[in-house]
Image (cartoon, rainbow, N blue to C red):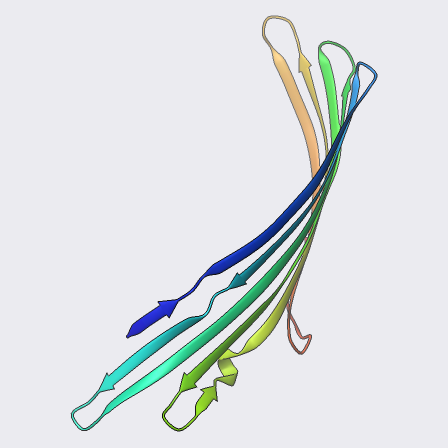
Amino acid sequence: VICTEKNAWDSFVAGVYWNSQIGESTALQVQFDRLFYYNNNPSSYINRFVNLDFESIQNVGISKRTPIDMYVAKFDFNYSVSDHVKLDAGVKFLESGLKNTVKLETDRPDLILVDDDMYGTFHLNESIKAAYLSSQSSMRHNISLSAGLRWEHTQTDLQNEEDELLVNRNY
């Protein structure tokens, strides 16, 4: 077996960040990010089969293309109640999606066969939402107290090219 594989990644990342100090005790941070990745991962294999009666060579090609999109938003709020007590709160959002196309071709001397069992386009969409609230308090004698709550929700859907839902996670 002789294998040749290419694994090329292209990417684009952009972000915007804003930080505002509101008075002496309050701060607000806002951040938006856009990420895009594209993976081109073709592979080829030359298989040589040898038997006492015959020898056969089979060329197998695999093409895999995957564009990945991500959008991220983050909002954080910080408030100092006093020199010893601080409160933080925030929300975060992530939306991502990818389209994965895989194709397997077998090259025989007289024709090229596309293996229908090894061909497909799949769409994955995922949404994650989270919120948090936390507090920190410093007390006497080097004692501190931290407490917090976090809520998160994830929705993940994977579909084939016929829009048949293969995975549906909602938690």
